[in-house]
Every structure is written in structure tokens, then in C-alpha cells.
Length: 79
Image (cartoon, rainbow, N blue to C red; front, side, top):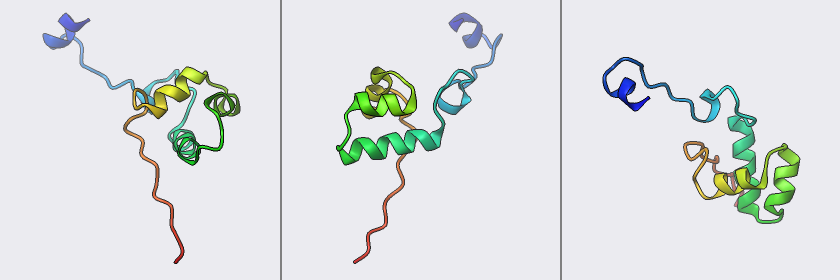
């Protein structure tokens, strides 16, 4: 395929994250997963069960191998 891409015979299409038709997660779910991981109160196994994905998927999200373009929204703190 790289030959076709490099010679303009086949355009490169971004099939990561939400652009992948086989993705089990939405961006909102990934934000929620990242928030749960940051809180540290649940294990990756528990989070994976809640979202019906593998523990490896949760690990990949945590370590930035998957869904790295989705950022968590800052939480508002009341002073």
C-alpha cells in the first residue's frame, strides 16, 4: 500500500479514532476513560469491563498509544 500512497495512486485516509468505522469507543467515552484513569480509583480491568473493551485498550489509551489526540477537559475548581 505504501507504493500506492507514495505515488498518489491511493489517497491517505485518516482511519484513527472516530474515523475508524470499527471503533468501539466515541471521543466522549475516551475522555471519560482518561478522567477515570487520572482519578486512579478504578483498575484498568474494571474500566475495560464498563466500556466493553479489552484491558489492553485501556492501557493503550493511558500510555498514549491510542486516542492520543483526545484531551480531557479541564475540571472547574471552586475556590
